[in-house]
Structures are given as C-alpha cells and as structure tokens.
Image (cartoon, rainbow, N blue to C red; front, side, top):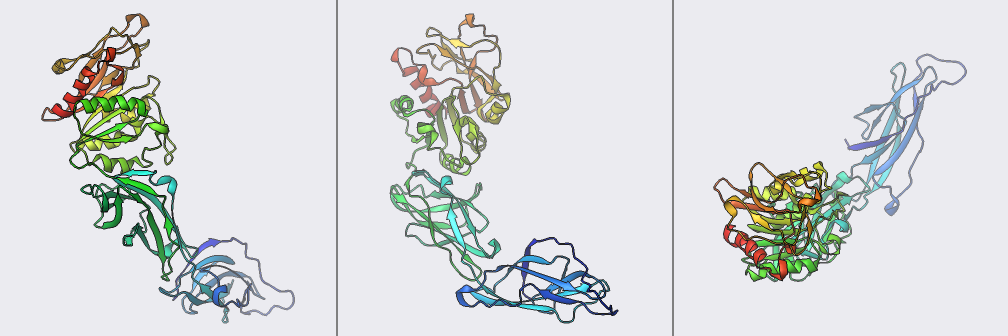
Length: 483
C-alpha cells in the first residue's frame, strides 16, 4: 500500500444526493471525482502535494461518507469531500504514478462497487537548504563559529533524508537533520593554516563523534550547506557569509572581555600588560556590541571553557540581542554561563558599573553568578569624592587602597550568602545616602581558594593622579597570585 499524508481538510456539509422522480429502494451510491484525468508527463508532472476533491450521489437516500485508497485494497474512511495529500515517492525514484480510488457510502451502508479512479502523475521536487546569516558569525570568529540553518521540501519536509556541511575545500560531512543550531570548535593547537574542528549540536556541552576538516586558521572561511531528499535529489548549495577565523593563543590561560569602548579598553590593556599577564582579548563593547555572539550559549560558553581564568570590564549600558530580542546588560547574557564555568573550576574577576535603576528581577538574572544578592536600593545618592578611599576588608586588608580620579556616583551591592566583603568605599555624607557602602565581594570554594571577585565599580576610574599602580597591583595579585 502506498503511504500518503493528509495535511488539509476542507469541511463541507454533505448534502443528500437524491434525484427527483421514482425512488427504487436498494439502489447503490455512485462516486465521482471532480477531475476525470490528469494528462501530464515528463517535467510537467505534479509535485507530491496534490489537492483532490470528490462527491457522491444516491437515488434512494443520502451519502454518509467516503472511503479512499491508493491500492483498491486498503481503505480509509472520511466524511470530507476534498483534501490535500502528500504522496510518498519511492526512495531513489524521481517520478511515479499514484493510483487514487474513492468510493461513496450511503445511509444504508451500501458501498459503491465501482470506485471513482484517478491516476496522479508525480515528479519529485528538489529540496532547499539555507543559512540564516543574521545568526551566523560576524566578520571574525574566535575559536568557535556558530550557524543556524533550515531546510525544506515542497514534497514535505519529512522527505529530507540527509543534510551535509563542508568548510572551504574540505569534505562533505553529514549532520543531523533535526539540529538546526550547530557550532564548530576549532583545534586550539593550530595557530595558522588548515585545521579540524569539533561539532556541537544546539547547546550541548559535549561534541559529536565527528571530525570536521577544511577550516583555515588566520584566514577567511565559508561554510557550505546542502540537503538531499528521499529521491536522492540534492538541493542547491548555500554558502555562509565569509568570516575570518582566529584561534586561542597556545599556552594562554586568561580570557579578557571588554564591554567598554576601545579607548577605555586601552586602560585595562595597560593594567594587564604592566603586570605581564598573558591574555586573549575579545572586544564586546565597540560599535554597540556588534562583535558580541548572537548565541551566547553555545558560542561564548565554548570559548570560555578553554580558559581557567576570566577577566571582564563592563559599563552599565545595555546591548541588544537579535535572537532573543532582549536589550540587557552584558552580565545578564553571560550569567548562566559564568555559573557553569565556576562549577567546572573556572575563576573570574569582574569590574562592572551597576545602575541603581535596575529592577529586582533584572538583577536576579545575574546576581548568583556574581556573588551578590542585589544592589543596595536605599534612598539618597552614594557619591565618592576624589579624597575618599576604597578600602579592602577583613582577610583582604593587604590589598591596595584605591582612590577615584574624580567624583563618582556608585551603586553599592549586597553580598550573597556565600561571599565575603572585599572592598568598602568612603562616601559623601551630605548626599542623603541611607544604605551600605559595600562595592566589591569575593567568593571562595570549599578549599578556601579565591574563585571570584566582583567589583561594582569601574576600576579604570580609580587611579588618582594618573598613578595606575594600585589598580595594576590589585589585578595582578588576583589573576596571578590568587587564581
């Protein structure tokens, strides 16, 4: 029996099929197709999605329903008079003829002994496959390139049997037809030239058992995509936007992300360089965050997993995301990733300005990931002046004091239950501030090792008189000694 799928029903009220005149009890119903023949051959054949309609008559009663079949042996009951069918072509077949039978059943359960018949000439339609380049890599990918693809077929998407990808001049590799979000983590041992990559589906933490070849580190790359249907017909090949592939620096243990402008990032670069800290740098701040990953998970998650240490500087401004439609602070986007990162042994130093206008639910998204419970929502203005100091607390008193270059309006924080007070700031008592003065927290693991430091101040504003040494020493001690 040939298989088919009914995808659309048109609902009709079945009218009595009686004719005027003498009625002869026991008359059998008759069945008619709206089209008596489809005289098409060669390239003019129909695709496998076909709309058919039929009706029945009965001189001594009415039609209660119909039975349809594609082999005149197995029948399926229906009460509708037209439907759209998707007929299956045999695997490897480009054309076929489908036999379609329909027979009416009257109110006495009499069945038309001579079903209406139609031969439907079909031709396979090629599938299609394409990338959504708005969700692909920007002009440069760092270690990980993520793509979103779709495939369809006029004969029904269920006829798509295989999907293949290929980087540049590499080999075609079959991937799952069910996984539209795919990421490639390049071999980090390769600094330039040909390289292989691991394939990740969706937001999985573990790669597939596939080795993808054809990538080129330090060069432009493209990814090709095609699909194949049940008949063995291939789609046209789609090509991703060109992207330059950069790789992790071998032996580097620190990832630095800046969400500030490049001019401010230059200050942090100086802090790190003067402490002889080796790092890989990602610019997530310039041009309204255009270089931020479209999919933080998996793209940023996979990148971050390559480094045991993470440093980030961030403003209070928000950034849009094309996939989710969010407009949020960068801490929101990476919160879940940072939590998983720390659970897997990663250590982080964050310096970020927080806006007092942030709603409780907004802070709740990232609070646990960054060793804070909430921002301090007391009344008044928390203002530090150029003669105020930001002082280390408790077990951390050996860390340097910090002094702002000029007056700063800050938003103090409330530490999470598992965090220590790290720094407190002096402030102007004449601005009506009624809350706490905690501006940095520290979190340790079960062994007493420092694993996270969170500053609710932007450290580049805290080197008075152009003296960067206190900030440099602070960063160096955390990233080199503690971590």
